[in-house]
Image (cartoon, rainbow over all chains, first blue to last red; front, side, top):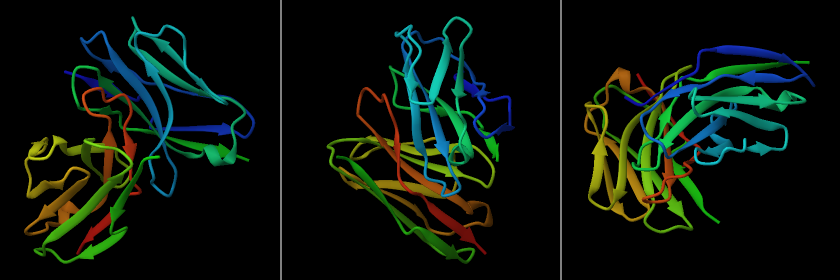
Length: 114
Length: 113
């Protein structure tokens, strides 16, 4: 079974500080994609960052970076210099290259404290 | 560039009434299309996905159905709504065959009273 687990239902961070959101997944596939999506109060799902499993280098997008540990099946998101606009629900997602489905975690609600 | 639209943005319907939610994608051809439901404070539940016209897969048995009358149009329907159908419905698309990224529409908030 292919599952995505986010063990932190809620997290908080002080403005300008760094926070790491955790995600683990279970798969027998060797080629797949991993994503972090942000859902602000507007509820529009916004792609934050994506990682291709065959790439060893961790993806980065400005203040957002990931720590991809393929052997451990771990995919954490680090947000540096947190801003008030980063407050949102964050979803980790997995998509195997052999199929058409995406699998989402249950989300982590991030609060940014001014 | 590609855009995805959902209509309506908000809907309040009585129990037992029919439902039709529309999703359209612009700027791409033959996309994979998806319907998700998100209950308040919860994750995303995949309802249907389609890899082409007349190719729709159902993930959760329920009183909802989906259709794809055109290549870039995906419709979510119900003949009789239940209270449990309330939620936030998201449509998404991805590139066919190699779904490397999923792009979401703005969503429809459905309240069944």
